Length: 343
Ligand code: SAH
Image (tube, rainbow, N blue to C red; front, side, top):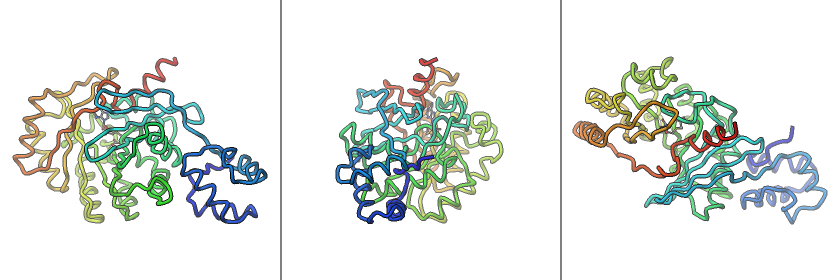
């Protein structure tokens, strides 16, 4: 098995290069090429031929290929990348006034089974390596020519179900010699894998944790999010409070508004209490319609009423602008269509 070189920390590579009997500066040269987006040892011009050959034998390196690129009228760009084994994942660049945000996938598929989500329809295929998540950022930036300043882990997959690779990705993308994006500019979104909250808090990284809540009551939440059945809203809320107390970082709640499912006045009141207990900010998102799913977005007037109730109770709320609607921006939709068209 060849080792995945881009997933290694620079100091790990240095140790291995020295073990190969090479001077340490060779590792710095390789790291430099990698951080420039070079993904072939052949192209690392300042390495001696024999070292290039050793590297080719011992290490895996790969350049993701663009299978599809779609640009929306609002500037949102969506990429479908082909990975080394033929699998595909998507990445979205969203253009906000405060900078460009990239939304990355963390797994090929997903095993969480949320009823409204396209990413989980075919289940989990495999985890992404740290290098593959990193290259979603590197190559989105390189291909689009846009400088990325923020990262949200809200693409395909459940980041906390691929914890070790995600942590490695965070350290790599934060490396001053590489992409160098500050932890404060990174958001990790989860459906509520609370078993990992303490591990994440203990890293001491000032990232933002975002909880995909989508319903404040167990009956509704367990219906649309199977991961809730063994955990429950109360326990998840307790862990959110613990995370906030341990890190001082406010959690945000994602709430996709689904017609006649989670948009009643009673649910707004309950959600307000829940958010206040957890010191959370709420992002309301009109559900993105996914053709395989029999769920519809709430009406604009319902969303407005829901928002007013929350604000009336002193909760911090934003209604997300819908970006990239014309390019299937909801996570998993491009990959889904790609897989379906192959069969
Ligand atoms: N597994 C992680 C991250 C991936 S999903 C999580 O659950 O948070 C990123 C966000 O998009 C989540 O809040 C998810 O619930 C939401 N989402 C998925 N499908 C959606 C849809 N059709 N419309 C609106 N939001 C959706």
